[in-house]
Length: 192
Image (cartoon, rainbow, N blue to C red; front, side, top):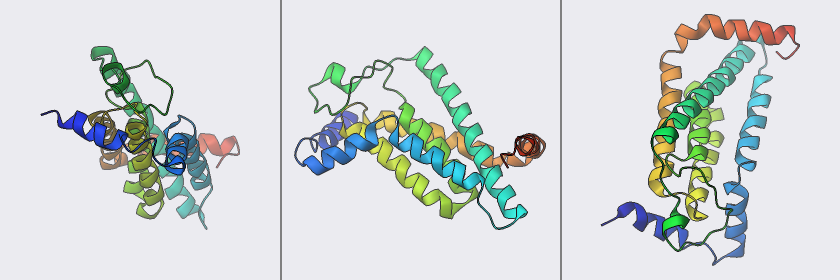
């Protein structure tokens, strides 16, 4: 039994029944809404804090999220060079609510992006992390709902992003000097 396809079918079959839900999923599925929202939240976080100590904490969080995002996407591109998985619409009849991406379905780029940022933030600051994690989950779910990823694609992307963020959180003490250098450099540019 193909559990991945069965779960895909169960989620994707929800599409096309409620215009409001289709509209919400179309908003979430695109490559702009969730990443832009996360990026704007990171910009706000960068300048957040009532004193220098708190601002330093938030700026460190933003830098770790950026490093996690970059690293996870480098690994993802390497995986894509070694393995190509066709999209669900290439092999099955689906309720497609999005354009047809041409790149590999596995792992999900949006899930990798969303979770690498969200988990990095959540591990440093759980209160800020909650909305990021909600956005990441909705981003991944919408990709299945709209017919462009299998659940295992989203799960693999979420695990890749999560693992990368965890590694940076676990070993962030080794990055104290580079992070301090980045903060000093951005301060000179009046961005901190």
